[in-house]
Length: 423
Image (cartoon, rainbow, N blue to C red; front, side, top):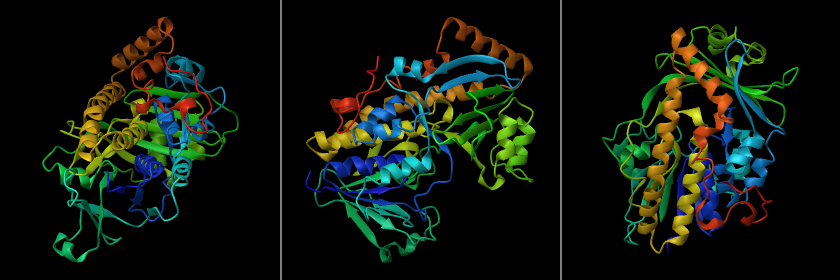
């Protein structure tokens, strides 16, 4: 491929992984991030073994595994604290070949951005695809229109498009998120992501007075999760079946106290330590229908831009990382860009569609509200966990044991320490 220039729209985890993967192959890569900096608002991200093996291919897997909490244990509980099921990272290693690492997003962003050359990332640079180009014609590169920082791809005055600066590239990778303007431009009329039936809250608080096991607590119409990060801070998240678009008139901390303040410890302690201004609230959206392809022209979509999903499997970021590594592998391996992008869509669409559906099924279970349904759900979890250990890991079968293409993972990656083999 003669035009070894690439533009990445979006400086999140998927976009930066794609940029690093192509940079390591000798491509000239520019990342355009609309935010003023790459410092994401504080929240955690789960990275299962599939994402770690993908990151091994760009030499970042060991640094992620170093963020793992030693002797990690996790539980599913009721609001009163009764344990329904439990697991630990030793079980994850046995089942999938690696632990589940929960990291702060800011740390992962810094880790990836640090593997790019100076000047490769341009912040305060919103952009949209002006022409997807033609991968079969060298004279038809993709064109990206730079927008004024105060503008967005949703509100830009396209009547002045001829007077705004453009960049061209042999490949554009759009990782511009769940409200992707690139997706709308490439596939006009395709259904937008739909509300999944629940809203999420996320927060990070300082270390607690005493350690607690990581847990997800399932109650009527909602879930609370708490997990310690490697530096002692605690990442917490919650979901509740509420109408979309809501905001608490007295602040989101007050809303969380109303919904979860009477649940077992450490939930009240976490809420007492929470900074009200640092609590994130977002409606959860999921793909209404799979796209017909993950690309069009010379533009490839990845992450939430192509397969938004509920957070119930902890695979949103993991699948974005997989997308990036598969795309880079195809670009390096196939004889033409057209063949590479076709192969990328064929490989990624079926897999990510299945992950979206699995996550949505679990998400639906968390919205049950009636007392009989909640009791039945708890009894089913407890009974299944008794006779089938590692219940909490079973939904990840066929997902977390994924291996990146080309065989360059774990001990095969430059500088990587040997990892446990997947089943």
